[in-house]
Each structure stands twice: as C-alpha cells, then as structure tokens.
Image 1 (cartoon, rainbow, N blue to C red):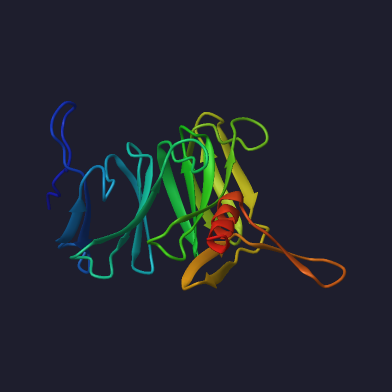
Image 2 (cartoon, rainbow, N blue to C red; image 1 turned 60 degrees about the vertical axis):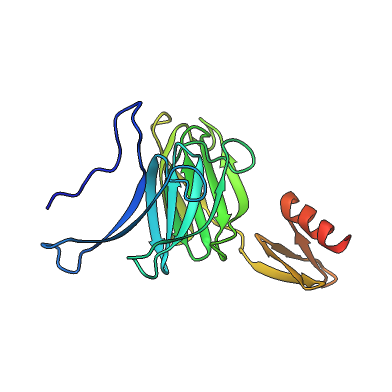
Length: 219
C-alpha cells in the first residue's frame, strides 16, 4: 500500500499532517483521519515525534519549537487540545526531538537547547512546565539530545554530540494540588512536601506557579 508523503520541496507550499491508520489487519492498513496545519492552532510544522497514551496524542514539531496535544478518542476525528512552545528558558523546546510520557508527566528532549524538559500533562489542554535540565558535557551530557525514554523512575537520554547515554533519577514525588478561590482554580503540579520536625509541612513551588498563586489571592 502506498502511504502519501505530506510535504514538499523547499520554497513550495507545504501542508503538515498528523495522520491515523487502522492497523487491525496489518496486511490491509486503512486511513482513518488526519489533522494539519503549520502555526496556530495545530503547530505541526516539522513534526518530529508522537507518543500516545490514554487517548491523547503528544506531538513535537521541531520547526515550531512546540509541544502539542490532541484528543484521539475517535482516531477519525482528531481534536486539538493544547500546546506549549518556545526555545530557550523557560520551556527549552528549541527543535524538540523525542518524548516519553509516564503517568501525568511528559519528558521531552530538545537538540538545539541541549535540554531535557519536564511538563505536567494531567490536563492536556493546559500543559504546565515543571522543570528543565540543560547543558552539554559533564555532568548532564545533553549536547544535541536526540531520544528519551522513561521506565521504573529512571529517565534515559541519548545525546548525539556528547556521544552519550545519560540516566536521571526521578527522585521527587510529583503531586497536583488544586487551589480554589472566588470560583477560580489553579492546578499546582511539581509540589515538594517537606516535613519539619514540628510536623509542619512546607510546599516549595516553582516561581511561575508561585506568581500565579499570588495573583489569584491578591485580586
């Protein structure tokens, strides 16, 4: 079976697609649906990788420096859900190459940022940055990071220009706390709970979520 190539030569008009096929019978692959478009809202220019979990497709587009989510409950009718983008700080998505999803957390490596970035995707329509690890050479060896895989609380990353396979331990417990005030709600992932000797608990928030929380309670 011929599967059409969606794209075109340099300087020509190009349409970018994310396509689904029915492979119930691997000898008779059947086209089901697709979604397309560079730029807003789908951000599929230079699609590089896809990961599917719980009826959500997580897609990376290297030319858009973007991570986009799609509802694929009905693979014949793919629906855009949300996106997050931007090379450099804070998202480090300059030419994202590979993604692995474990539970409600997405792990992405981006070659031009020499970065491993972690996002909370408990709400795929509202992707939230958790943290990022960057740097070529010792100790992170993320120069031109190419591939990421997560299993058993270990992150495995390969990096082309560091000639390296690097492992990172997921050592902190990732939680999502819901705070509601005046009928507005903020989801706070990546919340570290530290128990003090007096049995008080301290919550250490990332700066971006702390600013959102302060804004919520000072309106």
